[in-house]
Image (spheres, rainbow, N blue to C red):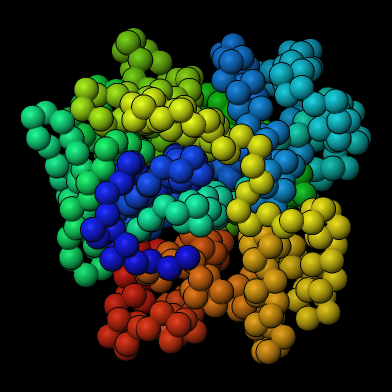
Length: 529
């Protein structure tokens, strides 16, 4: 994955995709596989907004059953099943538990009915993917950190988990392999128009300030919160903010779906890279789309919600990391005040204006592939092309060719031979899929690369250097927040950031002045403690 602005010059494109989050990535990948000449530009880094600020779940959305949104749940469950098949390294099953207390908002019978329906909509006959009931004793054995006062028992059910930023990155890599020209840090400055018809855009390279005119027959805006900030987007979109906190490990390899006592909303506690992800909030957002921040009230809400269930309460001092994101919801005809953001449908729609421009509104990480296929169908129909979607059951770009289970065993054996600890090896395989063999080859020549970057986290130096070398990193923040999420999984010091910047400076061709600027920018943005 090499960033090359010159590839946009002197070319005509069938499709220009603006926005390098999950929707833009899927659209570019799908369109390139169908043989369209595709350009994808993102004004920041890949997945730098909402697509790296999610709950990291590929899920049907059990809570949407309460609002009878069966169509959305079935669609998401179908996609969950597809992604588990097509990308076993990238999307893996995660079992959730739902405790039932005497005063729970959703009681045993309602929960049993809901989970039975959820399993039915998923259509899987595999026992490992079905829900189960656990009595009080078995539930406590699974989750000893929970308070057991008034606990009656609970259920477990299965959804799936991913690393959202890496999911997007892999699709970008796939789009490039299929012939798309993809550029991060490329900003659309204005559209090219003649007689009311849009026929392309001016794009500025944020690195060199050079500009290029890109002729394109169709344009798709998959720019999320920036869509919503535009004049027409204000009529189409409603913004909701969600935050997550990274907390110490209190779970094994199973997650919890819990209900906030204050307002009855669902929230999650999820194991992630050996720690606990706590989220999310869901509040109307009217602030700047450029700077979405975690506020004290958000933190207080989540800690209070979690502490209602924990034997040992968490405090502010336990927070390891935090992040905020804004999701776009379809604006309803009813007044926003009457409907809470958490009850607004997560379904998606495409707005097409009368001059070859399409706007993707709303949606979910889980169902983005299906929605992107619909977008590319529309684009193809306007171009007079009859080519069907190529992503439906296609294996992901970095999935190994061999049987996945056997391949994973072989890779873990190889990792152990090279001296990589078990937990780091598991995450290395998930993060890189078949590309992990390139990392192993480098370790063969330099065994010190198996050392962990930080003792507490399952990331090794070989991973850091591979990301810097091969994953279109432009800034230090790209590397330490999205290629590997160190900035949210550890309380890095300025010294840590400096040390890591120096590790990759040569690979990145950074001189001393650039290194110092990158360290300063990264610390200013992320080191609040």
